[in-house]
Length: 223
Image (spheres, rainbow, N blue to C red):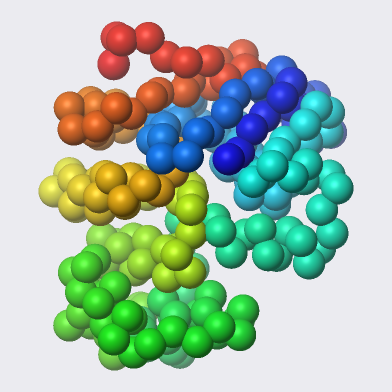
């Protein structure tokens, strides 16, 4: 589904990621760990073709990213939902319109019932008309997840989705991600929270990837 083959990324001051070789299989659940600045966000950006590898290869849905045109990349990203670390919304639009924005931008039409069902699923049905500045951190993160999956993606990439919420809300967000994975979605979550990883591994067969010395390794069972 998404594969890295000896991929590296160089920001100009030396390689941030080196010799990355791994495959994110359909329906898999991966956590990505590592210290701040290790390259977690860079890895996720490479996984949805926001960044191109400076060497090696990245393949998304069986296509080499370096061979994709701008239109190809846009089409490919419709199959990948991204929850960014710094959640951004259009503050002048109500929550429902913000969640529906990917459909609007792509020119696709979604039913009002589907939107209502999605907001209900993330527990925000009662806030459909609320403006983003009035939302709590947990509500913003759940809205970001709803926006990421409204296009029905095959893959969900989440960058520190629980970084600014309490433990109870972290578990609620994790439950939504686990449910998506059980529906067959491929999930990758970048996180510092080892307790969250342990909680997930008690429920599903989650694999843990650790960035260390610019390389990504499969973590052992010590988590």
